Picture (cartoon, one colour):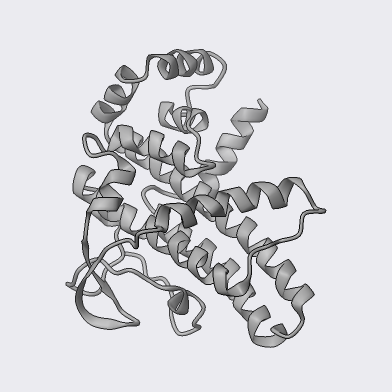
Length: 251
């Protein structure tokens, strides 16, 4: 029953699918606002800034894990044929899912159980899970090779082509590496400096947003996109999230 209660709680917290992107942006904004408030008021106090970065890395990684898990659930619940293809391509996973199914009540969906078995705690695990649902290109390959037409409201009112920078993989992976070390060793000094944190913050915010573009293209979940009125999908930057002149308006 412990797993059942955990899955029920996760379902309640994520709300009606698919709103994984809005949840991610809201969650990220909470952590970003706290971090930037510390930088604004206590920049000269290195111990406070260091502790804030430590907690920010942990919070950002939690946002990422939650985003990918909720995205995975939404994809598999929206497309039963896709779910079947994923099972057929992973015989071991299918056996583990069948075993898990015998111990959970019918109200817990197969997609929720599949997300329990997937690993979203590093880039390799994320790529493994999402490449199955973004075949044939694969997840990382699609991110590496694509330019994404979008609007960046705080920078340019026109449509721009966004492409991930060359070292984005290393930055993205290091977020999970740092989190693991900091969570499991309170004695460990946080070696990430504010100047380095800016790059980690950017990649953690941008990659999930353009991931929703891929999902919309492959599986038609366009309701998950953030967009300007009658315009292209929008990508928000940290400066947007930490401002206080916006609110969420749901369709």
